[in-house]
Image: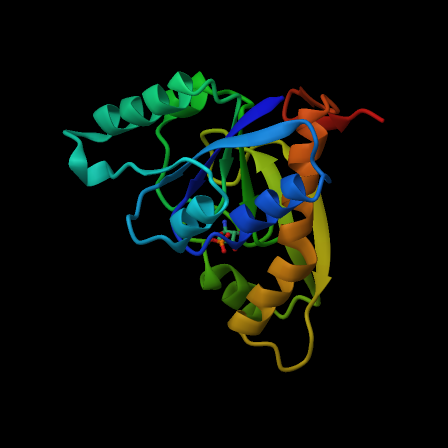
Length: 208
Ligand code: GRF
């Protein structure tokens, strides 16, 4: 059983999609052993509580420096035997040391088709605003492994979503979540938990 730690900062709808996929039996070989939030008021912590999942708040500002903070986070994850770290709307940048320590063990979801509308500064509604400003007709979401380059790690899954006439960043964000994020994030976790994802250099090969 793959032990997962989910890192969150906000609403936690992606966390909810993962919880639901485990409870419904879509994901059978993984369990969430902890949810970590950098924000004590994150609704994601409520969601964890409602489902009997251990939820903690680890705040950067409570530590001497970034190193100290990330060490505390790693200690917590390691003490629970976490094997896969899932960034589900986690807004704090993880340092290189942390990322190297968990090489190919951290996954993230980005609300666009990488390499479009990604990298530093592309988060939340800004991503969807940039897509609309460019006038793309198709956008989507990407699940990828995390490396030191923002949104730059090996791509695991992507799903396209059509842009429609009259879309606002808010409307598009909702459609991308419903049609892509809440589907491919659980799917990626399922595949990883079944040993069907192999990283080869900067690419992912999916075993059938
Ligand atoms: C999602 O749009 C995700 O793609 C991005 O942050 C947002 C998190 O939303 N990384 P939620 O907290 O899962 O509702």
